[in-house]
Length: 252
Ligand SMILES: Nc1ncnc2c1ncn2[C@@H]1O[C@H](COP(=O)(O)OP(=O)(O)OP(=O)(O)O)[C@@H](O)[C@H]1O
Ligand SMILES: [Mg+2]
Image 1 (tube, protein in one colour):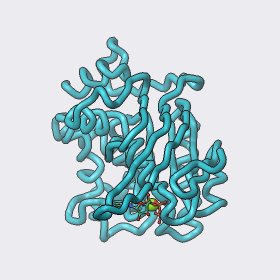
Image 2: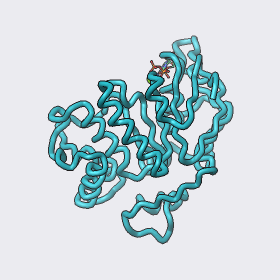
Image 3: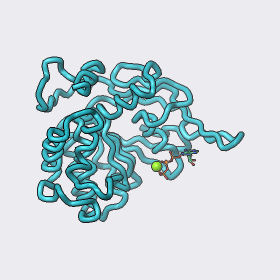
Image 4: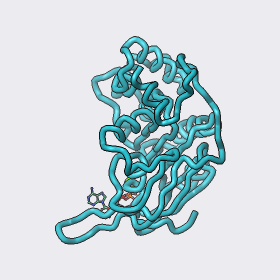
């Protein structure tokens, strides 16, 4: 229950809502993410590594962004900042109308679990855990009872076409199936935004298309997607492409 109260506080849940039914309201013109002069500097002893250098960007609700750029240009660092996985060194980050500097780490961790889904190149599934429980995990973290989390996990696995593989462990699944499990896991808390860091980086071209078709469908349903990719034909699935170079956005 805390999970829903929390989402209500951050304005992501209708107060009248008391079921698991999805709201699909799409407020296309509302900025979901706004960053102003955002920077991230790592320190290697006395030597600064300016991974993100003063990025300004607005991402609207329902956007599908492809983030491209050479290795080391700051894509993952920038995505980690947007996903509250790392704190910026300077600049402002407004998420859904709130300045994140007003939130402490615990609040940001809860916010992340409630509103953000992740899909990674390496899948990051728990190896000795069934597809069903891998998908249920973020709901269990959010304090939902196991039975309900599993029921919902089953629905998410059905959505990605894996209802006949729910008891398989990751090593009993193909790469594409593992990535579908990780998409189902990303979806389970009904996130506002899904971050994908090279979601097709480990997949063959046929499987990549299957995964991109799923992401395209999620975009059509109103999800906001931010995807890092090195492949131009994968970037074409997005509605907007942003290029990073040396920590700056060089074109958008
Ligand atoms: N935790 C860290 N500590 C120090 N330096 C880091 C750290 N993470 C990244 N960097 C440096 O910041 C820069 C940007 O790295 P980042 O991982 O964001 O690049 P990327 O665009 O995602 O590259 P790739 O396409 O290879 O994944 C690089 O120079 C990298 O070495
Ligand atoms: Mg990266």
